[in-house]
Length: 596
Image (cartoon, rainbow, N blue to C red; front, side, top):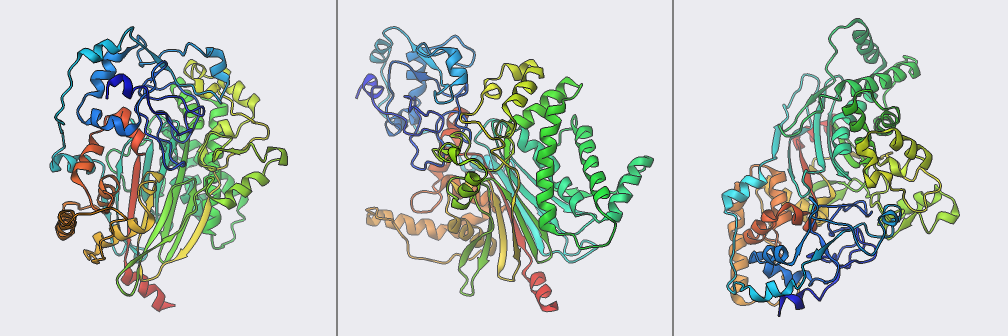
C-alpha cells in the first residue's frame, strides 16, 4: 500500500480534545472513553495550542495499526519530515478555514493547528525507498530498570516512634512520567505533634503548578487541623516572639520531590492565618478532634487560599505569576491518614485508594476505599445536577465531562470553573503579560451561568484495620486506566509475600498453539525469580502496568517499546503513573484488637 493511500484512511474517534473528530496524524483511537489519547491535554478537552504532532489539512492519515510498522521501522519520521514543513517554532500554524478570533472564543471548535503539505509532497515519498526488513531497537534490561527505578523511594518506619507502636512497616513509592514535565506529585510525612502518618498522590492537569503546590502545602493544613488548642497557641507564641517553631511534619521525600523556596514565605503566611482562625474559633476546651472533619476543613481551606492568593496577587512579579499558574491549573488528590488501626482516606477527583486483603486460603481481594468523582459515579452526577438550576441539567455534564471539558468533578485550583466571569476577566486583565497571552486562561467554558461548578471538598472514608489487611495502594488514574484493581492487589500481594498461586492460565479466547502455551508456562516458571529484580513494590507494579501482555505476563519487548516512546508520543498511549504502596504490620494491628 502506498504512503498516499495510507494517508487517505482513518479518523480519530476520540472527542476529548477534538470534539469535531478532526483528522489526526498517528492519533490512536480510544476504546475507553474515559481516557483521552489525542494529542494535547487529557483531562481538559478544550482547544489549545500544542507542540504535539501537527495535523494535516488536506490529507487524512491512516489508522494507528497501519502506522505501528512505520514507527517501529523509524520510517514515520522520514515520511513526516518530507511531507510537511512549518515555519512556526512549535511546528504549528494557524488553520486557514477558521478565523483565529472565532477559535479563541468557540470551545466547540478544536483549537488544533495544521501544517501545510509541500507542493507535490507525494513525489518525495514515491521516490524514496523504504526498508522492507523490520529494524528493531529495544532497550536492554539494565536500561529498562534504570528508567523504571529513577524515581523510586522506600522508607521503613521504626516500630516505636517514641509515642506509640506504628501499624505501618514502611512504604514504597515511584513515578513514571508520560507528560514532560510530569504533572503527578506524591508526598509522605510523619505527624510529629500528633500521631500517625500522611501519604498522598496528586494528579495535575493543565500543567503541574497546582499539583506541586498542593503536594507541598496540604499536609501542613491537615496537621494544623489536627493540632490541639494548646499546641496551636504555643506555635503562635513562638512566631510572635521570634523563637524556633516546633516541627510539625517529618517529610519522607525522593530528591526529585522538591519544595518551592520562592513561595515558602507566602505559603507560611497563609498557613499562619489559618491556625490563627482555628485558635479564635476554639474555646480551649479539651475535646477529641474529629479526623474526618479535620481532613475536609484542610482540603477546603487550602483551595480557598489558592483562589485568594491569585485574586490578591503579589508585588513580586515571579510570585504573582506563580500563584496565577497554580490557580488556573488543577489537581486531584487522594490522601491517607494512618493512626494505629484507624485509616482515613480523603479523596478529591479520580485517583484511588485500594486495600489489599489476604484471605484465609492465601488468595488476595481488593477493597476500594475511595470513589471516583467523575461521570461514571451516579451519585456524583446527581450531586452536581442538584447544585445547579434544572435548566442546566443537560449542559452541566456533556460527553462525560464537566461543562463538556473537565473529567474530574472535584479538584483543587481550576478557578475557571469556580470564579465568576467578571472576576476571571478582572484578574487576567490586571495580571502579567504571560497570562494575557495564554489562550487557555482567557477561554470561558460554555454554558457558564451559575459558578462554582467545581469543588475541592473531599469524600472521606474510614476503615478500621484488621490483621488480614496487608497493604494499601494509593495511585493516580494512570495506573487504574491500565490495570484492574484485583490484578493490582494480586501483583502487589504476591510481590510482598513471595507467594504465587498457580492459577490455570486463561487465554481469553485467543487461539494458542502448543508452542505458545509452553512459552507461557516457561514465563510463569521464571516469574518467581524475576520478582527479585525489583526492590520496590511500586516499581514492580509499574513494570506490570506498562509491560503486561494480553496474558498478564510482563513482556520485555512491549515494555521496551513503551519506555522508548518519545515525549510527543508517550502521552498518547498512557498517563503519568504515581504509586504509593503502604505495608501494614499485622502483628501490631492484631495487638490493637486484642487490647480492646
